[in-house]
Amino acid sequence: MFERVLKAMREKIRGRHYVMTLHAEEEMDNDELTIYDVERGILTGRIIERQKERAAWEWKYRIKGRTLAGDGVELIAKLGATGSVVIITVYRSKSSRTGEDL
Image (cartoon, rainbow, N blue to C red):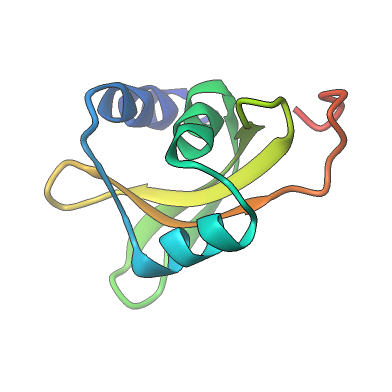
């Protein structure tokens, strides 16, 4: 449903045109994820939900993908005003490694 948005995000990730919020970096560290896990989560994932960001009235997207090890990871990200992907938060998902949730 959001293929165009996901394609644009993947292009930005491949080109290293993204930023992470401090919150996303803290959550990444808390869940023992690497930046490569975050990148792979977007590159292998799918958008499972679109949300309206109330403060800025922008769309943000919940993406479910896989880490380098094959574990589930979820991210909230948006296409920022500067053209970069803004990764708002990231966390390990509770899904199993079998891929049943993807």
